[in-house]
Image 1 (cartoon, rainbow, N blue to C red):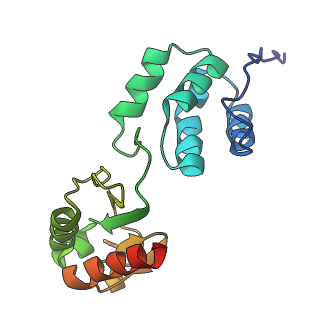
Image 2: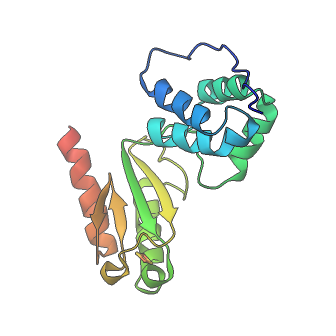
Image 3: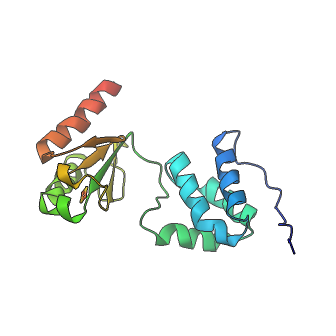
Length: 170
Ligand code: FES
């Protein structure tokens, strides 16, 4: 027997077309509480972070208490509740990259922009995240800067690369 899903009528937080992607994800995942993690992933991929409006929307649509949604969003390291900085630097901390000096990459970026892992710098320029093996161990150590893989990099080179991006924005 097929049980029709009762879909809560909730308006989108804004006219942004990306909400349709979120809706489609919820629909595919069954429009109920089991869809929560997949939906949060979709929000983060689409908007870059989990904003309060998004969490409220997802909670209402999936009929889950907002506190539960916040609980899940803050439990997983992957999710971030803050808007990303202008530039995103993801340092691979998989074994190969770690051995080849990834911690020094993290330290240098962290010191240059006064940014902690998982956070954005106070000037909003750089968000620093880590990843586990991104699948190009031969190029270790690796960072992904604004979606571009920077392989066999040194702390100086990486900082330089991010600084140049900053200058291009000016
Ligand atoms: S460990 Fe970094 S790419 Fe594999």
